[in-house]
Length: 420
Image 1 (cartoon, rainbow, N blue to C red):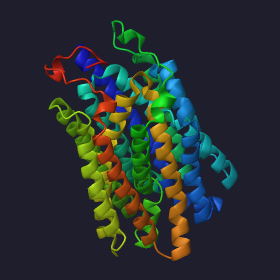
Image 2 (image 1 turned 90 degrees about the horizontal axis):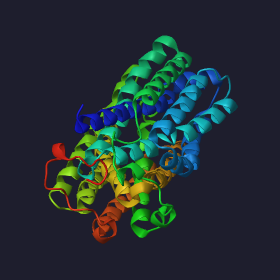
Image 3 (image 1 turned 45 degrees about the horizontal axis):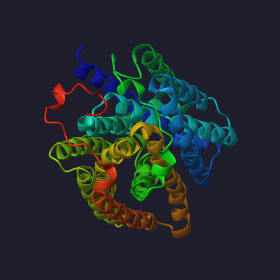
Image 4 (image 1 turned 60 degrees about the horizontal axis):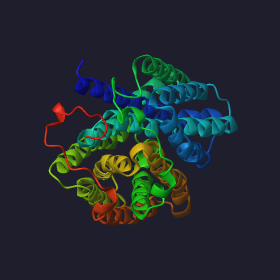
């Protein structure tokens, strides 16, 4: 097997991981109404069920990112996928609100390792001129997992009940972990120094507190504040606000996530194409600025529509725009972090998780306080405007990134997995 083909098999495995990760995460959204009825959980309490996951996710993010750099992606991803798969299955056994909250918090801590571990694996295996596409495909898998998961799990819940859906998904995760441990490796075969000694340097706190990193982290907060609505409240909101049945709501709720999957792939391609044409840091900033601009217009318009079809179309456009910025975000983490990619990407994901947590809590409170969702979407619009401004500043910080010049040969002929 050629080195080029082998490294893309690694990416394919990580795309599948992203899909499984998000299906496990959104399963609770698909089963929300059944769970709330059986366990007698109010909407405000369920906001905490959604939110406590992101809280655990944020708390554990930096430690697990450091572990991903230290242990290597093979052992690290095997361990954390096993842990969260067991917790997924255990969710199907809960009988009241309190243990559900505890499980979701620990589940969030375990899932925190997925993105830093996968980002570190891509850093180890993929040259810089192809890294945007690899990270875009990884996020494509996440969005496809959410889109397909909301539809698929909605029907599983209808026919088998919410408990069985969690148990089934836990088993799927354990199978992936076993196959990853058996067939994956931390580095490409025969990697020669310095590639064979890609160790963290200990400089990640200094990197994480730099001005470009703080701008990068903030814009990911803004992405998640808006986007995480699709992982939490979108499906039940469509059922309750527009009086859709669960199956129809599941299909409608999946549409923005399919758009996000397409945007993740497009964003990764655009990043690599612009980089190979010599755009440097602007190869990351251009698609992100365009995406945030689209999101600003779409989110603001979504605040004023009155039909399910118009709302879904506008929210889908917003998600497409935000996901154009996702591959640039993770690629820039690799640019900044180098051998500290796991830790730096964990910092960004932690800040994004705070945005997701605040989103899940804010949405039901806005409805309770104002009787409408408009205030939530206006707030999201303001945050996205600031996200676009952050990328404008990042695009002007080329001196900080010190990206190597793109190689003259085509990506298919490159043989250096990390340095490009």
